Length: 271
Ligand code: NAI
View 1 (cartoon, rainbow, N blue to C red):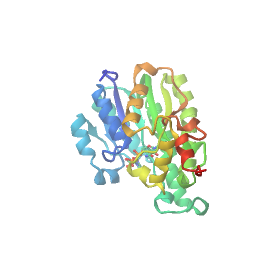
View 2 (view 1 turned 60 degrees about the vertical axis):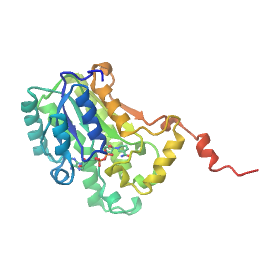
View 3 (view 1 turned 180 degrees about the vertical axis):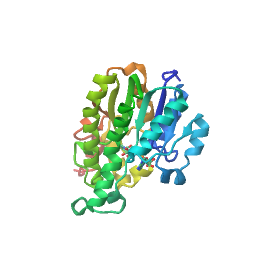
View 4 (view 1 turned 90 degrees about the horizontal axis):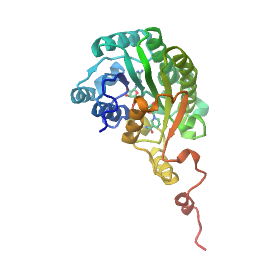
């Protein structure tokens, strides 16, 4: 441990269970000396094990539906009270598509579900940042990170409408990142993570095949949830002060590959 986040205070969204990327991040942030408030949707609190994480990391929990401006205002206000001042880091680790969950094909979407998914997975990031910005809740040189997936740039057919949500999310990071940087010296980035076995990840059709394929394509293999947590810690630390408006691929090299020997082998015929 390096004490990289000593004295820093934050909010972590999206820890559902011990597989969640946000859960691993909370553990690592705690180990690095950061303190934080944990938050999740009220319904997820009932299903998840967030109390266990709160106890382990000495954190308080404030429920908030990330689509509700009222909930977010309450969250930001209370977090500053609990943490005793402004905030240094925020992790947005939230994603959900009802079309994916209910097996609705991309070409046959239920648009009410599409809209809900967009609100939860992408617009919530704007709402979180707008709430923080208006409340002047971030310290200078603070850092905001959201998690995304490469289906925002390339076609992964079964990622469905989440691909569009991620493209929107990444755009919000750049657009809001400009204003947050200019006005408050706060950086905003997205981490584009390898497929990772979590509740949200496993909802994608054919996930097991997909994760094995990505692993064979990547020279370093898939990045795990713990790897992602470590990368996020670096982005919250003072070592990355001028990294902003970036979509940062964290995928063992996958995003720049055309094909790998390991994948080719499965297509080579014996001569
Ligand atoms: P997860 O299922 O553990 O986390 C998703 C979280 O979103 C849950 O804690 C859930 O309660 C929360 N959430 C859903 N609706 C919400 C709402 N209305 N308000 C507040 N929170 C809400 O899964 P995972 O994989 O840890 O997901 C975290 C992030 O990582 C998501 O943005 C996901 O798209 C992204 N990601 C995941 C990958 C994977 O393969 N698992 C790959 C690349 C990115």
